[in-house]
Length: 310
Image 1 (cartoon, rainbow, N blue to C red):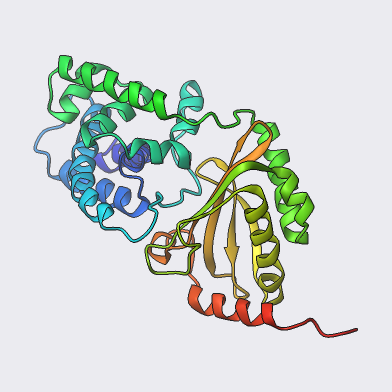
Image 2 (cartoon, rainbow, N blue to C red; image 1 turned 180 degrees about the horizontal axis):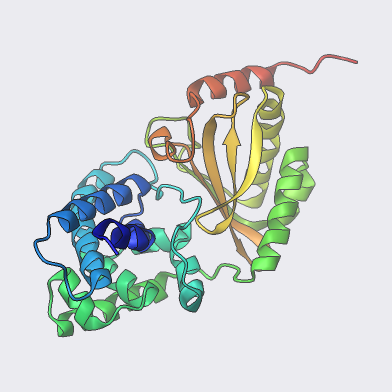
């Protein structure tokens, strides 16, 4: 097998590691590309290509994350990970860990960890790497990596939200939610929302957003019911999709361009959190991006207009 073939075989794993460390599709792709350049320049083949490339992409991701942390501290409004539509890496033996670790809620929780804790947690808890491999990847002793893993696990378990785990129930609830949303069914929406539901958007100052968020079943249901009619009237569509492994949707304008993504979290049979990514810079990998300011202006105009009488 050639070096190129070896790398391409491992590319899904490398991207999966980088995305979980970084929470960014574009930065993960950059990390994988830089890993390829270092692999291509390596003078002699390593004993384990998988261990070598995983270590390289982890080190690169840690460096990128340290730099990104400064920018994220200055970010305008709430910061969410870039939405992931499809996880390229599959491992039947670790499917539960993989699915859980890519959810929007889990990635936001990972943001609380230091770059080293995050990398160690991802390699150990998500991908099952041994501590000798982890130590080589992060440049710390095995003992230090074990301590990092313990601290990271403690932080994750302490903050982990208890969202609905049953996939079938999530899918059924999501179907009911989007059906009620399409119809502008205020009562139907209210019935599906938890009392303390939160609707939060990430615009990065580059798109309209709902202040710091909208909270409570009454407020969120009314907002959703009000938004849908003018949105549909100007040709907008809602495409149900899995986003970060969770039920969600992609919103598009009349030309099929992406406006935003939305993901739902469920708890005890109700929608507990609705997270929307509106920042156009975080959506380019999903497809051609709409001018969200124009869409917002047209929707507001449509909201003010009364439908023509039959």
